Image (cartoon, rainbow over all chains, first blue to last red; front, side, top):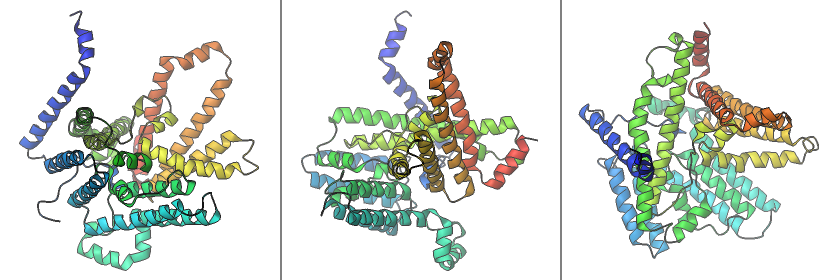
Length: 48
Length: 423
């Protein structure tokens, strides 16, 4: 356990990206499963 | 351009497939700047035409105003040097033409004034399409103003036709920025790219993942709590409800907008092109001035260069302002943010929103000056501490979130909300 923080720090980018990709897939699958894949919240600033 | 060739940027498989093909071809043409330019223009045109609210007439309009700006920039780049009256009038004419184009598409009152009858006929056929809109109009007109002004100042010379049209229509940054600068873009387009394939793929891919995470995970989590997304009427809101709704709006706004910037920056990087950063932890800044220096940075930079400094330079010549530099910067900042508010829309709430931020930054400037005069060592130590910084970030976030009420609600809605929360 003593060596965990340096290991985490060293691999911060990989851990972060894995975390993000995992949740992107979960949310996309969830949206697809509920048939709401096309209903992405539209960006407010595009219209400016 | 109809049928299957219709998809939104960034959240459609078709877009990513098209981007991958363009990026590969763009890199394969590494030795020829002309071929890369032609490919990029063809790709940008085809991809813009895929946008659901963008048709061939829209593309022609973008090319038309690009032609006007290009002609002005070329004429300014050639001929005599220096800030002569002839060159000044040419630059003013070019900028006014571009701004008139922007105003026409942004301000419904202007469209009503100029073509009320035809708009009524449009509205009868399609009530939601009464007014003419042009996607990304602010972004590419701001870029056009930048090129005309810099050509006048002499910092841009010999604008290339192909490079300029690519600059104006560059698809990753077309719909929501960043508002990148021409010299940097043209230099990158002429060179082989910013780095090695591996480095560009890694950096671009990482930004795209960050952007997708914000867009597909964080935004859907936050959005239901946003003030304007709630189904109950504003008259039923308590102070806590309104505060939480505005906090959520601030976070939603940040994650959504910075997601688009991440995707644009990442997408461009896949082609070996580097776009400027647009956000740098704005909600961790210790005052509203610093927040604005780190929020939509490409717009803030544009406003400082093309609104704030011209106003300050003009006023500096007046006898009254010469001994009052602080007042000069306060006036300059207020004019800039009023302009920013009016740019967002013609409604009164946007003007109030601009004035609110102009006033906020002015107060910060005054406070900073007073702070420097304090001789108490203990207080000075506190100003440098992380506690002071954290408290500053907390109040700054609250100031920004409260201001969003002016941004998203019209005056009637604001009145309803205020009377409800003060009940």
